[in-house]
Amino acid sequence: LKEKLTVEEIAEKRNLSVDTIIGHIEKLKELKENVQLDHTLPSKKAVTEIKKAFKVLKNTKLTPVFEYLKGVYSYQDIRLVRASLK
Image (cartoon, rainbow, N blue to C red; front, side, top):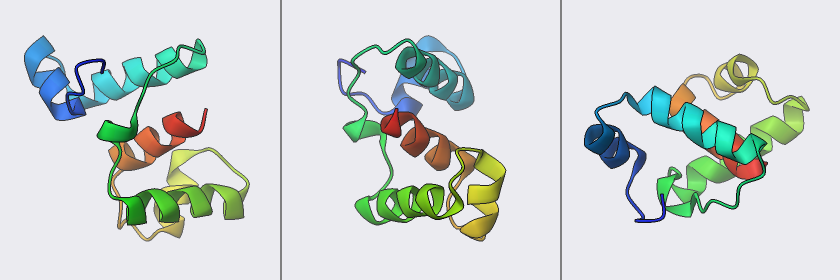
């Protein structure tokens, strides 16, 4: 993350799945680590819509947000945005 690599690049470099890397990012945020995620987030439009969905639903669970957004954004994108909110 400090090298400003994308999640996909980190996964490839470390020979791990993208989901594993996102899980590590979520754990870092839970531990209140100061990590910059701007370069890992989807488009500004996606971030805005996903944040709005979390706010409207008053929920941080993935499936309700995914369904509210009618599957337009991946669970990975939703997880990254959720992590950025912590």
